[in-house]
Structures are given as structure tokens and as C-alpha cells.
Length: 523
Image (cartoon, rainbow, N blue to C red; front, side, top):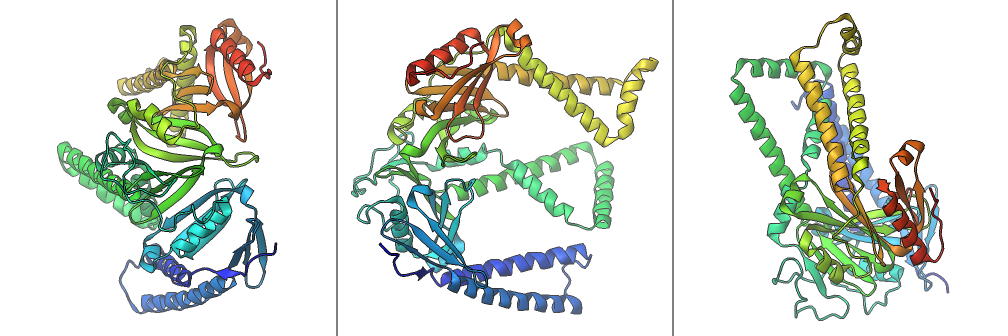
């Protein structure tokens, strides 16, 4: 069958591109004024510069129109998407529907103003980056295109977007509303406001706020930065320490509130709906997003608990999706922003029945391996400590190595700081030994590791291609080994370090029993 008639995007794509180009030029203008030391005062030169930006913005609008005119697409009867782009250099792309992994529908503020949505198509081997982006489509057109690429009949595709939220909720696992009458599109989960706030409050996004402030601060001219640093140092030294502490806490609270509001806007109206071959996730207030996950492409469940959430017995639940046979072709998608540990299994049975259950009991590493976890973190801490001293003052490292030989002792402050840092590193290693574990069942294998957060990964049985048991001579003396699960279409294996021989043999028997063959390396 030949391709259908080539079509173009909605004309709003020209307006959306033009707005983004104008915003980009505005930020370039602000950066130019700060770097040149002129501030935001508008003199004759700055007016000329603004006129120059406006002219460039006009030409960028013309370029946006030409880009829109040259961007055409069509889907043939076999489900192959054909896209033609380029003005001087024409580019033709063909995307088969069996290569399509994720079709993401979004609606940012500009799209909502124009009454359109954007559609992103990710394919196998795309490394998480969309291969084709439609910036402006009518929602009905986007839904029809999505159905064509996924092989869903148009009668089963939703033309009106996500199903409206229900008002009933019982711990996040509400029964489908009676208003949801469309077959195969029933409501599975909705995130209530109280859980949305708790998720935003414990998301740990403060680092992004401070990093953004530091980036803006770094754009200032060097003389301005030095002047501001001198002013801050003089101000801090001239006031009481309690005042400095108060303003520091106030700044921290302000950054926390900004991160909470941003996360609540980002994940507002979070809901999961059932599809014919998987689930559909939609969320967002200013920028609405919706994407589907096919059940046969789900590889594993990833449960993440940071320090704060672990105190409340809550976690975030992710799903690892297989994106093809290429190396590193996987994507981790947030399926539930916040869930109580006791609700994980009911949530899995209702929303993710194709994935194995999260076990309650794990085989912990033996006691004789605890010193290995602690020693690894202490050595890493020593390396960081030396690097910090060397980068802060090149002579400090020399003094550290030479003064003890001359009988000169360190000050009490240096000794205490070194001891506290190494103790924290050792304690972190102890926590890693304490919370690590591995568990096996007929459906899959679960590996729990402790980093900056407690991560529990539950792999499907058919996602594991092999098991490797590795041990160097020192590990053999302690009768421990490393269990490596070779994962399909992943860039690395899932490892569990310093496992006992009993756990290693259990992994060997589990793989032999579930796959009928052995690829494990005997010790």
C-alpha cells in the first residue's frame, strides 16, 4: 500500500517556535548586559541592541514558518511513519511501528493557549531522546497518530484525552468510577493532594534550586563577583551569629518552598488509566503530559526510598522499560510518585500485573563481609578528603604528609574533622551492608542496594539472560562472592556484592530451574 497524503502540523507551531525564539533572544540580551557591566539600564546602545534582537526575532519567525511548511508527515497502511523535513537539505525518515517504544503527548502553556498538543516519538536505540517531535497537533489528530503507530484501532483510541479524575480514594487504590464507561480505559490510580504535597516536600530538589542560583551567580563579571563576595563577608562578620543562622534558615526554607511548589505543579492531577495492552499515565498542570507503557516492554520494578521517605514508610515506584536490542536502550519511568510500603503489592496487582511482586524478606550479606563494605567507603572517603585538601590549597597535602614525620601534630579541629568524616564514611558503609539483600521467586529476582537512597529492583525472570558468580582470591578467603545478573538490552548487569556462598548457589539453582540451562560461572 502506498503512503497517505502528506500533512503538516497545526499552524500554531509557527507561533510556538516564534515565542521560544523571542524568549531565547531576551535571555541572550540580559546575559549580554550583565557580562558587559551595563546592568538593565536602557541607554542608546541598549535600545539599538533591542532593535537588533527584534529584527532577529522577526527573521526567526520567518524561519519558523519555513520549517513548518517543509515539515510534512504521513502514516501508510502498514503503520510506517514517513517524515520529510529540511529546506535546503531535504531529509526523509521512515519509522516502523515495531521500533516505536514511547509516544509521549504533552501540552505546555503555549500549546494550551493554542488548543493543541505536542507529540514525541521515541524509538529503539534512541537513548531516551525523541526521534521525531510534533510541536503542534490537534488532540484528536495526535490520538489518531498515536493509535496508528501502536496498532490500536481508532475505535479503541481515546480522542478526548485522559479520563476525568474520580472523587473517590482509598489509600491510592480506588475502584473505577461509574463515569468511566469506555472499555479498556478504566481508572486505576490517582494521587490525592495530601500525597502529592508529601511527595513534593520529600523529593530532595533543593540541589537544583541552589545549582540554578549558583549558575546565575556565575554569569556575573569577575569584578562584580569579587565585589559581592567582599560585601557578603563584611556583612556576615559585622552581625551576630544568630542573625546569620536565621537568614540561612530563611533562605533554606524559601528554596524548599520553591521546590515544593514546582514539584506540585509538575505532578498535579497524576493518574493512571488502563489500556488494552498496558497503562496510560497523565499528569501536569502548566505542562500536561501523557504517555503509554506497554506491558510486554516492562522489564522490572524499581522502588526508591531516600532517608526522609524511609522515616515515613513511603517510597516512589518506577518501571524500567525495554527500548530495544541496542546497548543502553532502556528507560526508567516514574509510575507512582509516592506510595506507602504496605500498598506496593496491591498497587502492583492492580496496575502492573505483568511484573513480579516485591518480596518482603531478603537474603542479607553475611556478617563476615561487613568490614568489606565499611573499608570500601572509608577508602573512598580518604580519597575525597585528600582531593578536597589538594584542590583547596596545594600546600596542605604537603603539610599533611610532612608534619607528622617532624613530630608536629595537627590541631584539634583538623583531627576532629578527619575523624568525623571517616566515621560518617564508615557508617555509610555499615548502612550499605545492613540494608543490602537479594531474593528469588518463580516470577523473578529482587536485588536491594543502598546508596544515597535504598533502591529495590525486581527483575522479570525472562529479562535475566545469565548469572555470573565472581570472586577474587581475597573474597574467597572470606567465602563471599559477587552475584551479577546479566540483563536483556541493558548496558550493565545488576550486581549484589559480597554475597554468601549459600546465596550464590541459590542464584545458580534459581537460574537453572527457571531457564532450564546454566550460564553461571562456578567458583
